[in-house]
Image 1 (cartoon, rainbow, N blue to C red):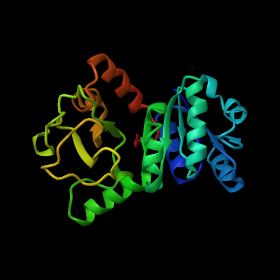
Image 2: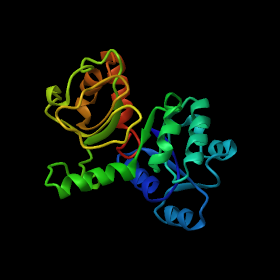
Image 3: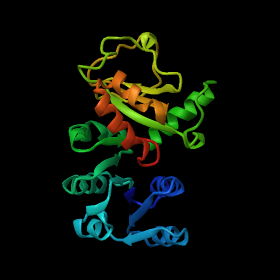
Image 4: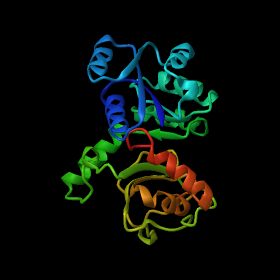
Length: 238
């Protein structure tokens, strides 16, 4: 598959490496000379330019890309790039860093396929490790696993359950939970699950469709299609 990643910084470059190791075609878009040089030294195809400009994304091959990951530290660039990619029919993954901007950009969640929070998820993994938890740091996750953020819909079978009542497949674990428009946290057993709540799940690729049916309420056909997209996604957090 073909992927365009906006940003060759820490998050974007790592995502590119993972995708390339799995045999995918990756093009990076970056405007910082130092990062362009580093990515090219690693034999990546790099388009030197502003990822929020349509002509730059077209030069990167957005028209033929399967997905675009807007993974810079600039949320405005990420959102603009996602809208351009969406216009070209690509699957879109948008990175958000600053918690205080989340509420604003949640309004546009329907405009992108996935919103990811690398720093927040890394902090959750570190907190869990410090508290003696069993979930390893995200950087250590095996390549056959995927980390996804899912939003509960009305039709989700778990709507109305508590976290203590939730039963996932054997190869799936909850990493974080957030009520609608609230920060992601490590969940407690008495948290209720309602429409708009978000769950960050670590799951084996083969379990993703079952997890999506359970937590999102997708049909088997939808869940299989979306799980397949996630399995070829942008660095594991989406």
